[in-house]
Amino acid sequence: MDELDILKKDWQKKGDELPKLSYNDIYKMIWKKSSSIVKWIFIISILEFVLPNLLFIFPSTREHIAKMYYGNTYGVFFIALSVIQYTVIFYFIYQFYKRYKEISVLDDSKTLMKNIIQTRKTVKHYVIFSLATLMFTMLAQAVCVYFDPVMLTTIYPEELPTNVSAEKFKTIMTITFVIVAVVTTVVFALIYFLLYGLLLKKLNRNYYELKKMEI
Image (cartoon, rainbow, N blue to C red):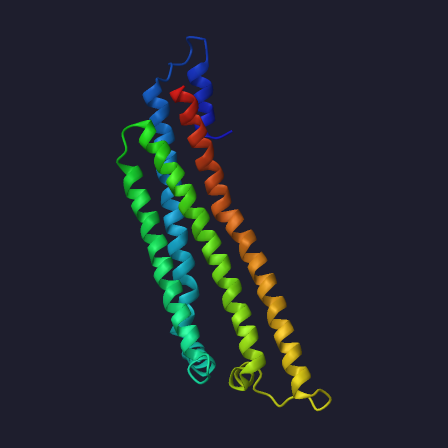
């Protein structure tokens, strides 16, 4: 039972031992909790973008990426894909920031309910885009591993095993990439469920509490 549930119980209590909580008291509590949830969604989205990109601080990472994408036929495609991905992610981060600023100054329950609905939709669209982009990028890499010898050499710089033909080795590496793509997407989906799913669950509960208060 969280703080809001305790306050609701106190508000409904019949006795005179505890002071009754007014509609405004309950609304302010829901508003503060909703604002905090949206703020955490905004913070997590920033961390999700910044932390992986910290790897580019290391020269070895930059060198590996340069060999993989700038030295093969499909490099332009992946660069364009990265630009689109970053642009859309910045858009979602801005939307989360915008929702947080809007919810921070609300003074009526109907507008707060509308903002909660918009935030839920934005988070769902963001998660779908992130997972779809992750899956698509890794599957595209699997295709490139098969058709582009430069990328295959970058990923596996050692000499090919003598008991395996080049064609069979490319097939094995491509299948491996596909499996890794599926597993990675599933893992990230679980992480998204734990992070955003729990926050949205709390936000949904706030929405239904407001809806009941409006009846």
